[in-house]
Length: 327
Image (cartoon, rainbow, N blue to C red; front, side, top):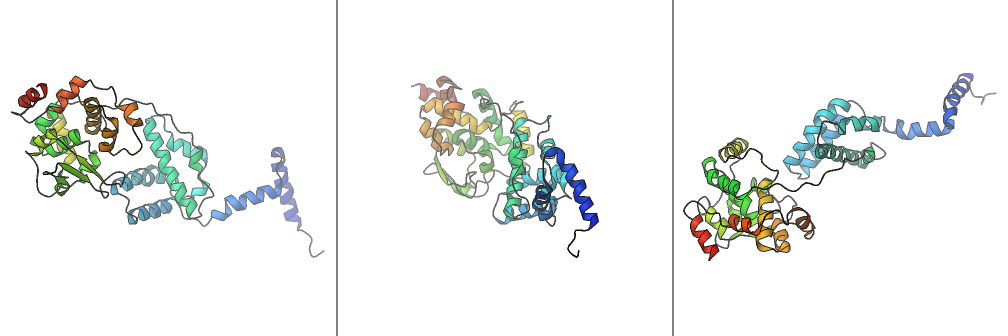
């Protein structure tokens, strides 16, 4: 019979069927799965190549360098070292768990790793290099809700008083009295600070949310800006910023620096002083209502401490401001 199945194939089929028997799976099911999950992606680029293509596309699309640097640090580092020469379709869930859920890492760091891997899978799915996002099956760590850290009034005073020694008075003052994010401050130009109308424009090109906002400010910030404002140029000199920032913290006697301390301080003291969470949320650039303020900042500081904070002025002006506020 010319159409007879060769003996070798019949023998191989019998062996394969026997292997599948304990799982009650048919030979056709196994072949279909192998074709769909393995052979289909055998010509896909390697993991390292996929990562490079994704980062190149993100850069060409205008993604900020800080975000690309974060992705490159993990995906181009530990992830590439582990899986770089393989196709992404061959990586198993257990392997992803090992590299993303490292016990010694903080929950936030583990969650960030999962998000970066998920972004990589979504990119690969879009290009047809994997069938789905395997990272979605990783169990997310639970993050504890912690109260935001802020500077007490004495620490804020010391930080402001020493800031000019290290060229960081604009950074300290605008961060504390306008709540501008640190990353936005590092991209802010003096041309966006209107000293006459007392407004700071955070353009979409520097805003974290890519949404333009205008922040009005009062006598508190105006008093500090009189000592350091310029017509143009960067508000914060990027040269050796990290070194100067570290020296400033030491000079101010601040050993434990809370995350986003300046912005969190502004939010805490502003909502305590003015008791207008809608206004505070607007100044912070929160567009989702006041839920975050209610759950994070309300009640952290007393109204008396808030009054002290907003009375902070450069040397020689603090006493007068305190007396004026008391009157």
